Length: 105
Image 1: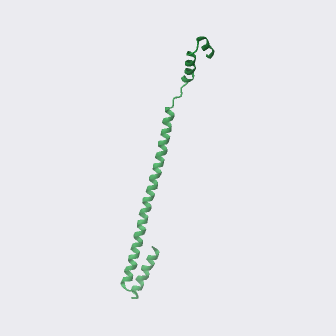
Image 2 (image 1 turned 90 degrees about the vertical axis):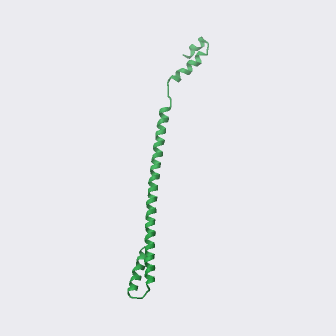
Image 3 (image 1 turned 45 degrees about the vertical axis):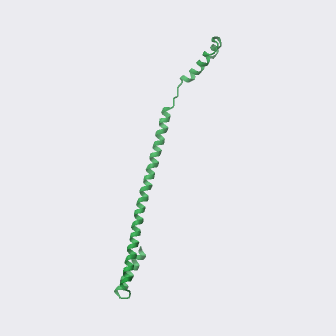
């Protein structure tokens, strides 16, 4: 954009001195306006990209929280019981001869 501004300033000076036609000045103004429009479009796209990055960061944080919550629910759902450690030997012993079962107590 600085180049387009310098070209416009140069064209205005040359127009004052009557060295270039009006068309050259109009072309320089048009070039500056196009450069300014491109710059504004680029700034808008940058804002959109920044918003998308922020949105993706929020989605990652949400996914991490969901993972932690699922892990906690899994930990809470796992049954850890000392009953099984006493139940299995009792079942085995109940299938044995009563005299033999006394050996496993």
